[in-house]
Image (cartoon, rainbow, N blue to C red):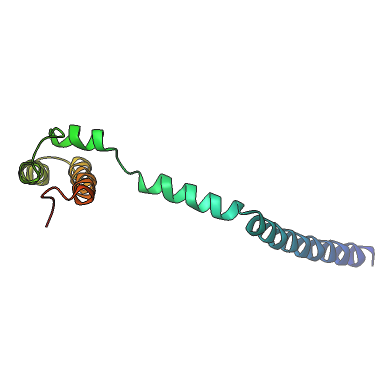
Length: 116
């Protein structure tokens, strides 16, 4: 008889505890959304995930200067991209692509005979 009562108390206590945890989690989400914590966390996560490179780093990767015309940048990009596709690594190929992408956005902004 005592075992049955003890088992019922454990089950009821576990159920009450589980409900309390779920309710506290919901309340925490509500508070976070009101305070903007959730949005800030998402923005930081997106920033870290994108990992954009700087213009200086992009120029170093492609081996170009600020005065290099867009056509020469494309030639260097294609040569480096193809070399890494054949003999290099996917990581280096990705870096070369991101460098071109970065410089492309800069040249588009300047409107200096940039990408077509």
